[in-house]
Image (cartoon, rainbow, N blue to C red; front, side, top):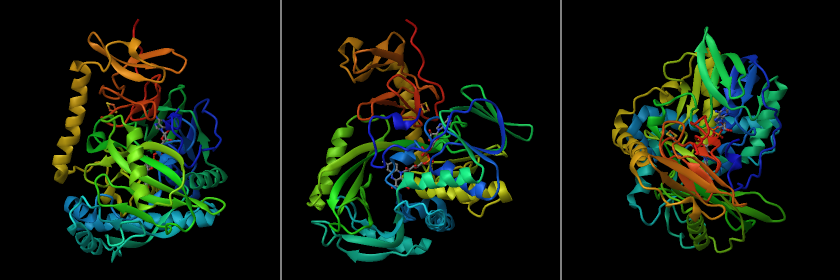
Length: 506
Ligand SMILES: Cc1cc2nc3c(=O)[nH]c(=O)nc-3n(C[C@H](O)[C@H](O)[C@H](O)COP(=O)(O)OP(=O)(O)OC[C@H]3O[C@@H](n4cnc5c(N)ncnc54)[C@H](O)[C@@H]3O)c2cc1C
Ligand code: FES
């Protein structure tokens, strides 16, 4: 099971790459754990270079956050280049921008070579001023963009109502695509090159052994490999070191019909924090789709998803009065690295285990970077981009963020031990509702399904014990500490947790 089991369905529909669960032990050169854009990109690069690759996923193939993305492909930092330069220095910021632009080019080349038919388009990206933000930010970002080597053109006005004079930067040569069509093309190419896929095969441990790696699955099967790549969005092999350097945020998206040509095909995002992001997707019969996203909040810290979607819709309709009917609404989670760059490379302290995580709202390009960087590490032992994305780095300039994000974790451990429940009794729960209920020293994550059946599980996240929170929009339990998500009945949907929420002794 993975996040495809959440209640909402993104605009891309359900992934449909067939694969059976793994039944027995096997040996392979490289085992890739996780079949999102990161895992698939690594598997594709290695399989194309002649490596024997096996891809495992805890649920359906390609059913992770990549199936819930909005797939802007941009080499502009969503934290802004001024902030990135301050945090990581000019050389790293330049290298990051260069690698992200190279990732877009790599996706473009791969989809062309594979005839992927995944709606890939090179389009402009626009950063525009939100009225609530300091107007100097646009000029400052123009200067910072030049410093990191990204072409930006200053302009006034956007093709949105009321934004005719809004200051903006235009970034040429950004891109977008249909993420699931792209992953389907990668999976076909990986299979043709001899790669194997196993779905519904949760990995429970990844250990270096005898000069290689031993990967154990929940069914008891073991995979022996020379190298393992943990591309599970939130790493399932790491308990602390990376998780303390990133934080999970939930973000929302909604798609509308729109008459073709009403809004030029481009990427749009504003300077608000959290920012709004907008793109188009080709439709049929002269009707395209406009997707708007944003309204992010720390996972588990808010449970008003429907209101956030309405707020996105209102914001968009004010700017695009020709917006048609809503097609679908959904949400997902992104992992924000405290020093603004993802963690991609050798897992700290290990030789043959690699990791890709912390890709913020830029996981598409980070996934393609992971493909190139990790393939270089495995095939050639080094990558010019390794220092930029080094997973073991100490983010010394991000101490403020480190303390802030880890204070949230401390608060949530304490909440499990000391806080009151949200309801006094399970009797108050209506069908489809979940809530935390105190029971003596413990707390219970209680859910009543549509048939009235009550399910009660421990409310302590099985990763490190934070208290989970009910998410009524997706009908799942979210852990605010490091991003685990569980089904209403307590099954894991998203790591780093591996085990389901604990049973309650009756
Ligand atoms: C609403 C939304 C909008 C976004 N918009 C953008 C955007 O415009 N541009 C952009 O670049 N990024 C965007 N992102 C971010 C981007 O979608 C993600 O960063 C990216 O998809 C992450 O890819 P991944 O391969 O790391 O993870 P995933 O796609 O989540 O893949 C990880 C896989 O690992 C599997 N797994 C987990 N645990 C285990 C285990 N124990 N054993 C086996 N398998 C396991 C999961 O089932 C999953 O299939 C957005 C995200 C959301 C939610
Ligand atoms: S994800 Fe780490 S404690 Fe829940």
